[in-house]
Amino acid sequence: MNSHQNTITAFTALGQLFRDYSTGNNNSNEWIEKLDNAIVSASNRNKWFTKENLNYCIQAWGDTLTESKISAWLNAYPTQQTSQRLGLVLAGNIPLVGLHDVLSGLACGYSIEIKSSSNDSILLPFVLGFLTNAQPEWRNKIHFTDGKLEKFDRVIATGSTNTARYFEYYFKNVPHIVRKTRNGVAVLDGTETQEELAALCIDIMQYFGLGCRSVSHLMVPEGYDFNDLFLALYEYKELIHHNAYANNYDYNKAVYLMQEIDLLENGFVMLKKDLGLNSPIACIHYSTYKNVEAVEKSIELQQEQIQCVVSKCLKNSLAFGQTQRPKLSDYADHVDTMAFLLKK
Image (cartoon, rainbow, N blue to C red):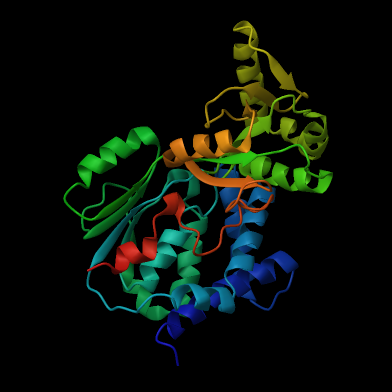
């Protein structure tokens, strides 16, 4: 039996629960009902956590947490027993955004103290309740705190570029990973099919574009025709009926119009020519290029601000529609979390 087997078994059970929920299979009995209640509560608590986004999150994690994928991920690393304590400061921009860090900490044998975001305070405790039921030895290893982290030997803290300065100072005396604001970038060459553009729209619009892997900037060739992209975006026209999204759209559009900024827009999303990678809600920034070499250089210069690149014309980029479905080995900010936790 593999030394990771207990962990693999517990994580696989979680994936099965998520798959059962997504497919309407009730094999997981009372946990299905508990998950459904948690999703309803999370949606009521956070206006950005719509049931559609929560269901997408559960389905994506269910597809990821299969026995074969978990085994391939964990078996690339040695096992360890440690008395060390891991502190986690988690973001709450999208549902279960901190789950990967929690799974990594458990897999590496840490006791974990978690400061979760108030924006995502329901689903993660539910998930950990399920995991500790599947693996009772973890029950005394997981603690949530509402205040500052107090007891830790290592820390992973996720926040904005502004909060990162505070994290770097506060955790300066212990090994740490501090994550800053990053965004997804798409590079188009004009030959994309309608199916590929539809998949790109998932990368852009899923979770209202709030994820660090959400595509917020498009690099397009000079003279690019946006008509086909707008046609693909039409799938998301109902977002304008989401009150918070609509308020952001109206506000940002008003600001741009007062500044006499040229926009391309369709009544629910705006395209603004802007070199910035981080765009506001309901707005997508774009820039133009003359050749692919210039694009590659631009991406290299901005790699500290880029979480992922989606394209069909660049090497080592993701396929359209995959930014919100990272593999277990696709580490945030390109820092191997497991290697960090296992380092002596």
